[in-house]
Figure 1 (cartoon, rainbow, N blue to C red):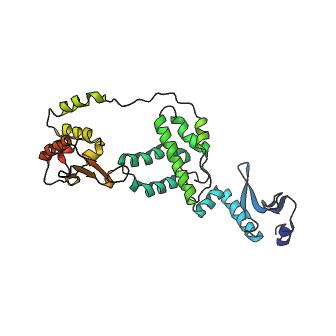
Figure 2: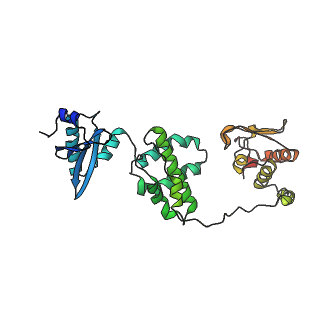
Length: 297
């Protein structure tokens, strides 16, 4: 039998620890709250594991939990991790899978979808993959990005941002209460000294001459690039255009919402030169395909 009783537990007022035997303690804080702690020792290391508040866990249940905790430790099982699993709190690896499943349909860029998951699998999972999402802290994220911070700064920033996104999701799900201190983490990393490298650009004054050069030939690529310039659109919007999007009579090109990055329908007025190019591109049209074959780069 233990040293404590239900009566002595209720009567305990002085702050301190009250032993029940076999590593089970009643802990009374200076504020008067009471909780159970099981002290275990394995391989020379001592550890105190909380078993719950006295308000929710009576003495008999505390003794049962203490026995279970000691048995788990003895066979090499972490009781805290097991309790989190029972509570349904996912590991970082599991949380990533859940976030990816919830969001992949909204990510239109296939390359982004693949990279979002692959970068975390490559750089984060080996270090924090099996860590509970509730335990993840700033120093864990730092351990992930530090090895590539100077060597691959852009990749490191993306991994950092994606870890933060997973943690924000976990807050929304109720698995944790605080975000990662990413600003403090950034300050602890070496300063990156690099100058941005911009893509080569054609001076606007030379655009008319370049358009004339493009129109000297009749290839599909030349036509598509000419249309892109005259409509100020993205290459993907031109390459994916279908003929039912083009209204020659009203001189309008209507790109549906599902093809736009912003997810909203976009209507582009077509100038006479742009219409002429599209009519020329129509000569390349194939009856078996809705795609504007003449627009494909």
